[in-house]
Image (cartoon, rainbow, N blue to C red; front, top):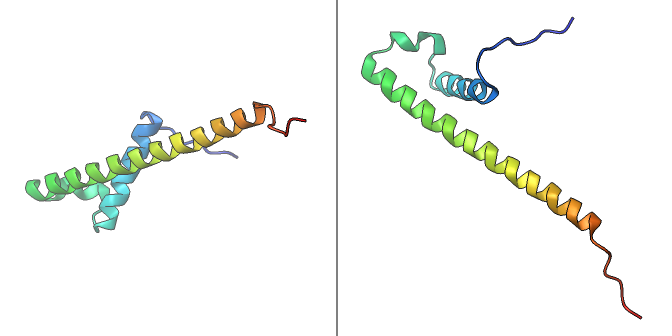
Length: 87
C-alpha cells in the first residue's frame, strides 16, 4: 500500500518548513514547542531559522539552474555539426 503525504502547503513551502524544523532541532528545540519559549528567544531563533532556510533554498535553486545549463549546453553540442578537418 502506498502512502501519500497530504499537505496544504506548496512544495517550496513544505521544503522551507522542513528546513526550519531541521534548524530548530539542530539547536535542540522541538519545533512543536517553539511557542513555549520566551518571546525574545523565540523571535531570535525563528529569525535565524528563516535566514538559514532562505539560504538553503537559494543554494538549491542555484544548483538547479547550473544543472539545467549543463544539460542545455550538452543538448546544443549534440546538435552542432562536428568540426572535422576540411580537405
